[in-house]
Length: 66
Image (cartoon, rainbow, N blue to C red; front, top):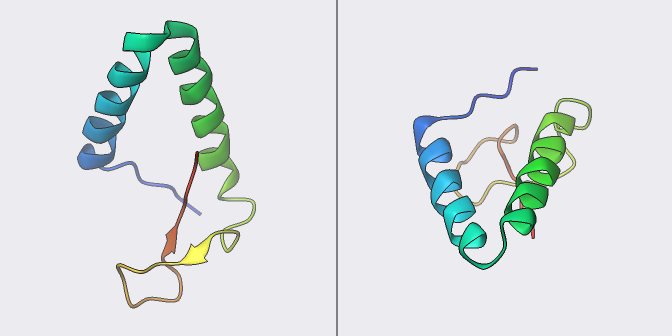
């Protein structure tokens, strides 16, 4: 399984990380690391998360994190 991180994902993640870093840089670093671990683990358990509300495809999932 291949996980594709779109440009939109990267842009929105950068915005989220910048907002977290305003309060505490170490919290931003921890969040980023934990999120990357969760995303990388998707390939081991692809159906762990709920079926997507946005796509009518059984294979598409919505990952909710923090």
